[in-house]
Length: 150
Figure 1: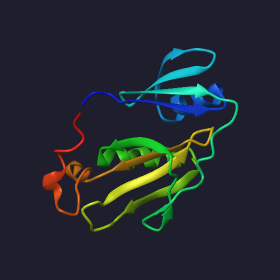
Figure 2: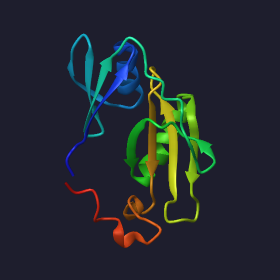
Figure 3: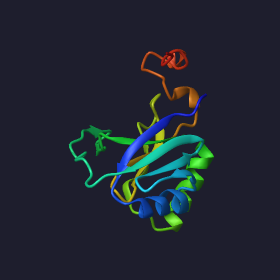
């Protein structure tokens, strides 16, 4: 799989760097006065400094919880997700949505948690016990591998 690229707004590059490097373990690529290029678990994300953040608060509910409509994240291996949750707990990280299992007992069952970066960007970290269920539908996981090709 090829790495994805995501650019997103932030209001302060210094606190953004500390969060992504010290908390999430990202490494820095290029940096300018207005942007920060990060290795996000093998993917390229770029924080662009803005004067003020857009309003992303109008969102819907998923599995009975308020989920931010704009977010990005990572699908981790099951053990990695639990170890990372424990790491965040040891740092007393404040969660936007505490770690929990969403859709228990269904084909979409997943462990998930949301944290915010210093600018309020929501980051979801999730995991499936069976990775083939990532794209599975109610019709069954036989559809999981076919979609999304350009």
